[in-house]
Length: 88
Image (cartoon, one colour):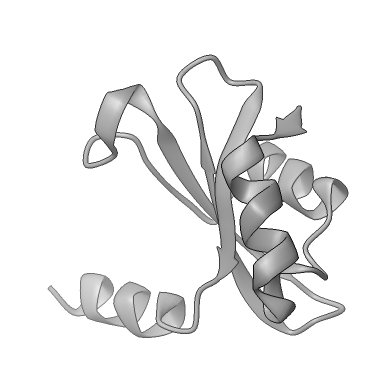
């Protein structure tokens, strides 16, 4: 896997994204807590996972080719969304 040019620009410009590594993204993709391909544009798939050493949830969006990470960011609302989904 590799980061897209778009994500590399985001990492350069957003201090909180600089600490996101390719290894973290690959781990989330390999063992996601949740996955969503239906609502993503152009065949992309979003994956969510917990990065234990950061005690944070990471959302990783992968292109339809499965090889390029379009974007990745810390998702503060993941736990809340999961609780709400489980209540329904």
